[in-house]
Amino acid sequence: MISARCNQIFEQAILDYHQYNDINKAIENPFTSNSRDNLLYTKCWIDTAQWHMEDEIRNPDIAPTEALVWKRRIDKSNQERTDIVEDIDAYFYEKYINVTPAKTARLNTESPAWAIDRLSILALKVYHMQEETTRTDVGEYHLLQCSEKLSILLQQQADLSLAIDELLEDIEKGDKYMRVYRQMKMYNDPNLNPVLYNNKK
Image (cartoon, rainbow, N blue to C red):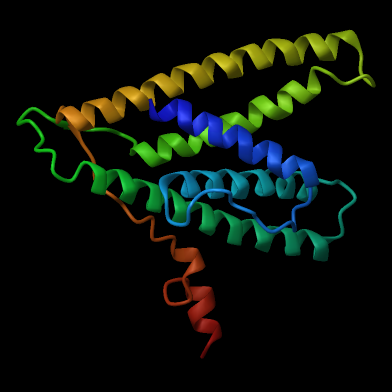
């Protein structure tokens, strides 16, 4: 099942990142270049670094100029994340390109890779909520609340994993079909964002 492999790679990427816990640490991807597993690992590493960028920008004492630096880094990270999700969808599209959809085949509301994107974020939530359940500087109520939240996250992870596997199984059987959509984020494109292209004049 693909979801089990995704969860395994996501856990590895998160643990590898937290050996250094450094947003600026360059990724050291252990998987073959351009492989599916390489894409999954890179995607989760980006998510993990961005998770910590989001923490930094929420510091109430942050200087406005520093916040702007973080905001632009987060924008860049979001674009990288979107690009790699689309590459993962392209992988699945090519994998099932010879499957002839049934006449009754339906399109899913979400592509496989965007569901896998949510699975990567869930892996991060599980990791960091687990951390909260082992803190020694908080009261029992905090630990209990976080333990309850962790249980919900784990159930959500199991449910989403099953849904992803069922979606891919339906695509493989021809009961559903998929397309690869490029997000075409206009605000990052100097030719499509009016503030950017008017600034060049």
